[in-house]
Length: 448
Image 1 (tube, one colour):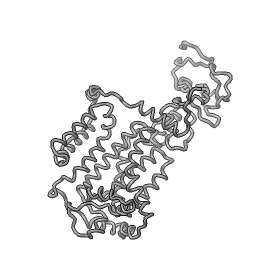
Image 2 (cartoon, helix red, strand yellow):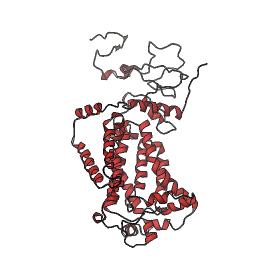
Image 3 (cartoon, one colour):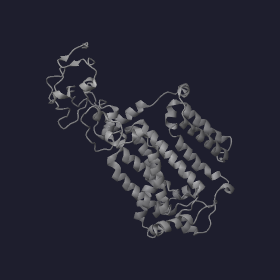
Image 4 (tube, helix red, strand yellow):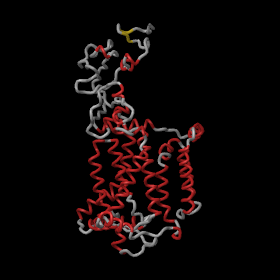
C-alpha cells in the first residue's frame, strides 16, 4: 500500500504557506538580471533616500576603527554583492534601513568624545517627577523577588530579541509581500531615528543613578545590566554583564527602544491579525513594567519609545495595507475584497491567526491529501431578477450537496468560485458580450 501524507490543521497550512512563499522567491543568481532591472527602473524623488543611506554608510565606515582598514572594506563589498545577486537582493534590499540602524548602533562608539554632547544625568528623573509627580521607576525597583525577576527577564531579555524575527516570518508566510517590506522599513527607520536621538541627547539610565548617584557621567563608563545581574546570579553566569558591559551605546535611555519594538510589533499584529491583539498587548504591558523594574528605563523613556513606534507605524503604513487586517475591506476605506466585489459568502473565521486568511491568497486547491471530497461549483444566474440559483448543466447529477440559494452555502464556505462570466451581473456587461443568454448557452455569441 502506497504511503500517503495526510496533514490537517495548522501543520498543513504552515507547510502550504511555506511552499507558496518559497515558490514566490526569485531564485536567479545572475547579476545581469539585477542590472537589467536597474536600467528599466524609472527613478522618482523618493529614491533619493538611498543617497542618504550611502552618505551615512560612508561616514560610519570612515570613523570605524574595528575592524580596521582595509579589513572593513569587506563590509561594503559583501553587501554590494548581496544587492547585486537577485536571490539575496530580495532579502537585503528591503532590509537596508535595518542594516543602517545596526551600523549606526555599532559604530557610534568611535565618535571622538570631543564631538559628543554632554551626558544628561538630571534630565530624565527631573522630567519624570514633574510630569508624573514621582519617580515611578524608582518606586518599582524598591521591592524585588526571584519570581518577579523571571517575569521581567522573559519579555525584556528573551522575547524582545526574538519577537521581530518571528513576526517577520509570519508576515512572509501569511501576508502579502508588501507587508513584510513595510515591517522591515518601519522597523529599520524607527530604530535608526531612535539611535540618532540617543546619540544627540545622551541620557543616563536609572541603574546609573543607583550606582553613581547624580554625579556627572563620562563616556568612559561601562554599561551595566541593571537588574539583569540577578538573572546572571540565578543561572550562575555572566552573559548579561558581559553584553551590557561592552554595549556601544551606554547612555541611550531615551527613547526606550525596548518599548518601541514591543509597541510597533503589537501594532502590526493587531492590524494584520485582529484576534491576537489582546495577547500581544498584554505582553507589551509586562515589558513596559520590566524596563523600569530592571532599572534600564524611566517611565518617560517608555512613553517616548511608544510614541516613536506609533508615529512610524502610521507614517509608513501604505494605503494598500490600510483597512481591516491590511486586506482592504471596503468598509474601512480600502479596495473591496473578492467576496464583497462578487457578493460571495465570506470565509469562516479561523482559530489560528492568519491561517484561513492566508488560504484565500495562496490557493485552496494546494492540498497534500486527496481524501477531501470535491465540492461542486454552483452556477448562479447573472440576472439578479431571476432569484435563486440553478445547477450548471455540466454538473454531476449524483452530487450529494444541495444547490446553494442566492449565492450562500449550507453553513460551509464553498471551495471554488463560479465562472467569472456568471459573476458579472447582467447590468455590468455590454450587450452581446457573454455567451450566456436568457435561453441558455450559445457559442459563438450572437450580437443583437
